[in-house]
Length: 63
Image 1: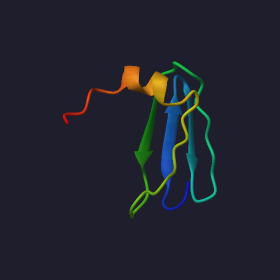
Image 2 (image 1 turned 135 degrees about the horizontal axis):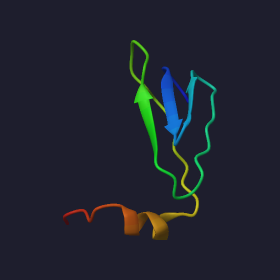
Image 3 (image 1 turned 120 degrees about the vertical axis):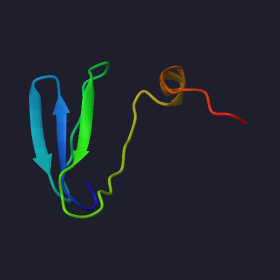
């Protein structure tokens, strides 16, 4: 988390973080992130495994 306040949920677990917070979601588990602050939410996402797995999950982008 870089700026703002967010609620993270994964299955039956839920937590709220502000700047400096870190959350790790288990692979293949449904999860969500919700802006619960008064301003913008700025966060950085890191995906592992990388792009090959994400390519299968993401819709194809028009060229």
